[in-house]
Image 1 (cartoon, rainbow, N blue to C red):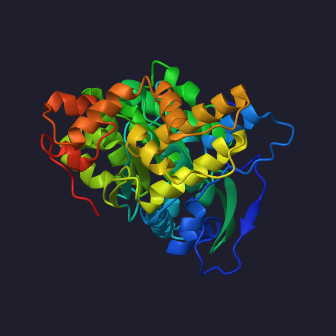
Image 2 (image 1 turned 180 degrees about the horizontal axis):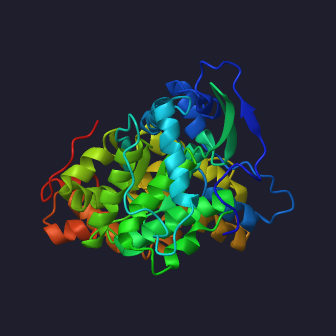
Length: 430
């Protein structure tokens, strides 16, 4: 093991000015106002691209545009509020939680006999722990990655060393504000363990993942191991993203959902899950216990634009146009572009970025500034060839066409809760 999850090797020590304040809150931003959250969740690529070709600039910029709205901003407000509330309950100035943190360190680094297990089979419930799960249900091609990027940027993902004053002096503890992991392939719990433990190793330059490859480490040890790491690192937020219907449609996913639910229940650490509505409806909705824990902090849905007239869609068209087609020599967005683009993409920003990028690269290759609705449609449809069956199916479903339960599951990653409602029990939204 290259380095234990302890304070050695880290600088950036933070000392609280007032002992009455919880020292971990100094590294978490205050809960923003709606206006502040709107600013924090907005993203336009601003890297210095001096010396880059036009092709490189078009491809580089388009993928990271994120236009916010009140729903997206409220997600950040909710998350920061949950993180701050969790740190107030996990106060290391209290003897009870300090003892709990020491036990977590002992689980990870304590001496072991020859026949002892590598990690504990059981892990105690933290003092004052309560579930703080948050589910943001978002179809694919709706900017899930960009939203998580903004959340991580706002909260931070760099480990700190925090000095906690006690009656006998002070002690230094680690704090990791946020950790990001992806849902495992096929939804299997060992894959989740590898992803989360590997993310801890990347953050702290440790090698805990090696312990999971020994014959002594079994699936029943996964949850205690993750809990111990979360407590020992004083983790603020666990983010699990890219949760799609294909990887949640097997029985193996039940154990993974339940492990995440038990993690937040046992530790009190907030867990943000980003499934598609299809993954949430088909998989998570069948697990009442896990669903209750993972939505205890909120269930929010982000849906595609309902039409080309919506302000958010028009703002997205403007922003992506400026990072793609404008670089190809077209000075301003034509007034009819939102309508034509909506007809092509049905309001999915990820598809919009794909279409406008393809059109811009075509214009640059031909060295012509000629741009029209016909050009947008022709080269946009070429860029969407792999997506076209899904777009056609979504169009039929929106128009009230006939469909079966299996069809809804097949296209569930693209659909909203309301579109899935005819064949699946839907959760209640906040």
